[in-house]
Length: 390
Ligand code: PMP
Ligand code: GLU
Image (cartoon, rainbow, N blue to C red; front, side, top):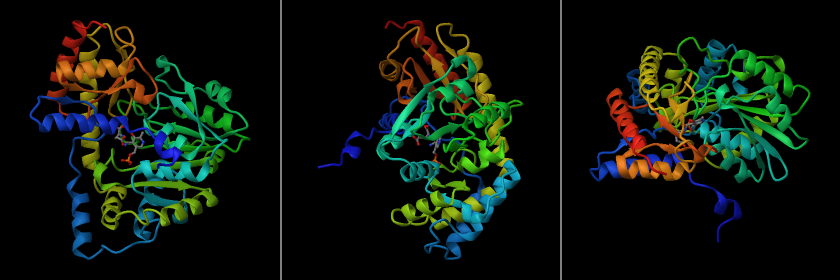
């Protein structure tokens, strides 16, 4: 009855575990969840007010497929101001979250016979989106010591005549590593002379810690600017996950036109009220709130790293960004699904198995939750691990 591509489409493990933890909590179980891929902070007041004003002013009509001129100008301002990138408003499209931007780009760009390079570990949805298009994900296994960042040589070795897209994600989910400008430049150099398009997923841009600086891939060279689709959103960095706002910016006229056609025949414009709220965020009106969140995330990262480093059978890369830790449990258990199920059943702690990110023997711990939960949760994890029998 179903199309082949629908039958083989896997479920989002991150969403599934979060839903399971919420169900258990609703039933009264004392579950501590570290599965969430969303900030626990509320959307800043000034963004909410922009939405309320838009509702009151009757802004509930359809808009242009790519978005209102005002929101496109706000994205244009943000990209110039924060990243030094110059895009025309005609080169920008707003989408129903960055997940939707990625999905639309992949569906418009590739098909059977094409290859898409995905560094491992990856964000859960990349391979599924690629497989849904008919193209083949090419997994590049990276080095844990290097924060699982892909090197220029690893990229060079993965390129074939069939390669059409490189998926890049910095700061990364699930590791939290951030590519330096030099690392990005080295990757950009490898791509010179090819037709490979980079989908640069910059969702966690504003969540960088200590002295680590975020660099947009398109900003590292003229060549990179031409081949990159800059993809971003406000779910993580403006605490707006449920508002569903993402955007893409690209110099590729054909791709932009194809995405507009696909969107025009599927979702039309994104929610008009969200566009008004997003405009306030993109113009920097909530920057103080965002900075407060970043500082709080950094404190939680530090606490979680301090406590977890006392458990000697596990190891992890200390993240420079995002709000996750990717924890190596391979000395205890290679089957991450089994480990996470046991942890949930026995200690009521929800984390996401590494297998969902392409790497068994790990789990992802999200510290987008209160300091109290982090302390209590790591106590339970420590207890569980001390008595662990595979
Ligand atoms: N990319 C990464 C790496 C993510 O973690 C997420 C989180 N869901 C997204 C893209 C998509 O986010 P959204 O659709 O909420 O904008
Ligand atoms: N991206 C978040 C995560 O990795 C949210 C869940 C999802 O969209 O899959 O948990």
